[in-house]
Length: 286
Length: 274
Image (cartoon, rainbow over all chains, first blue to last red; front, side, top):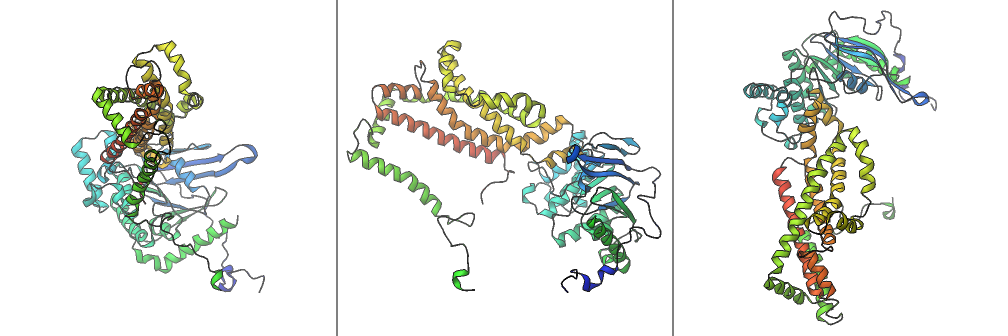
């Protein structure tokens, strides 16, 4: 038994991932008519010459308006780099980012972003944090007040408007960060593992909460996550990236539009999970 | 496993690192640290082990102070010196803080000023004092300038470091909320670095008194540093010690004032108490 691999006895090895499935879907084979967000042939190379590392290799993704898409992949495969480029926070080596058909050369309020470590402004109260983008735009004070109240209500933190971030728990801080991004009413919401730093219970609560929020606001979302279940639960399409920085596959999630947490235990859900987990395992070995 | 093989951290109260400390022990140790040197000083001076001129007794120092007060010079000296420190330090902050913020914020400013700040910082200000007399004269201006020169670059460097420590994501998030570079500077960088700026000022004010005494070595007519130098020449060590102690007390009060200012101005800042 010295040569047997650790999981052999579970017969998992028999379910090998098939990189050439019978009905092959070329990457992003469902071109969207007028995409809200288009990531077009983005390549990012770090370093020069022999030490050059290709973090993102000619990736193209289109997001339809109101679509929720997730991108999953092994650690260090370039997902965060791709998202930073989409947000305009990093320059791509090649390729363009387009919002509503127009090339956007830098960051802006049209692409809001939620980070993994909250990044709330410590010197502002919760309400002032949520109002930050609105104040930058110079909206009238009454309008700001109403919008802040509305979004604080949506995330369930109306009572904490005057508190400072240091008084909040991790889950609450993330909800404020989400309210702050949404209150600015961006065209697209980009999220970089927003629930990664939270414990399992809070994570599930926030997943369900965020799904309801997305249904209500109909905002276009592009999200990175390590959690395959989370990706399937929240999105309509899941993109799989591999370690070489290429987009491997796009999986259409054919679950009903409205999701409940219990769906995670249904056979259909598990089929998707199985497919994606094996795809990731295959990517891991590359 | 035999007992000798089990290894664990031996408990310790006095040497505790981040494992809690009895609250009564803190003031006890602080008072001990003040009382023991005082006791040694008293023993050596009252006991006659060291002569009066080299180490005056605590009472001699206090009575020297009293006599200066009676002569009417003490309050003037304190006010004059404090004024010079305030003006010099104020200028050093007015120029050093914006310079530091610029250096910390913009790659371009850092490249432009970094070299200059990095080298001139090492030039001893005391060496400039004779040049000061030649360039600027002997009244108030050279004294204020010496305090200014001594502190300004340290303010700039420490503030620049504070700005560089702001996490990338804090700035990035502002970009994604629609901030322009101007918005970023005034609405994010400034407030985010404010606690460090106040702390920088608190720390650097101590150095200001040091440069003040150096500056009063020049032809000064009044001031605590002047008093120290004059008393040294006549071996009135009791007056020297008293003036030094006065400066120390002013320093402690200033430190306290800065801490209170920080707590009042910046209630949102994370404290560093564990």
